[in-house]
Length: 190
Image 1: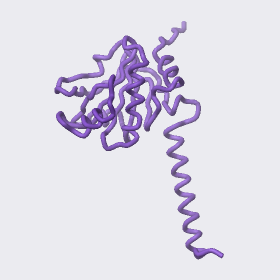
Image 2 (image 1 turned 135 degrees about the vertical axis):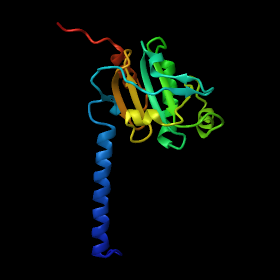
Image 3 (image 1 turned 180 degrees about the vertical axis):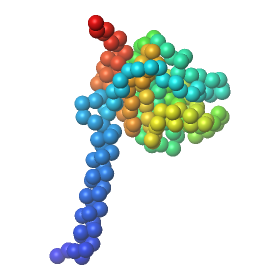
């Protein structure tokens, strides 16, 4: 014998179906099959035109300064638990990839000074990543970030190659192989 009425059980079952369907849609968008940890390949084209951001001292930095390297541009927030969970793997990724071929840059929508982002960086004990700030949130709008974390991978020529929404284990062997394959020049045909 159940303590719930048939009406209550039907409502609970309907709610469970809605939640399951929503989770299936989210899982598909975050980790489509056949792609390294849900990183979506983008056709290479023209260099991305993105706003500059700043370092901790307030000096302007822009994506053009990373030309010649594959740029892993991660947008994150100090209030975002998945962002904080993936930050150590980004730090380890920066250590594992050759500096002359790759740059791992984490940018947050925060102000200069003793902020939540600065405290999070310090608390996580990150050694390779530097704190970059986008106080106006221009990068998020230009990239089309719908949430945090969002990562855009630009090729050595500055053109978008891949896009990832959601947390990833960036320093996994599979991901590093994927990133190294992106760095390889595309053979010319004809």
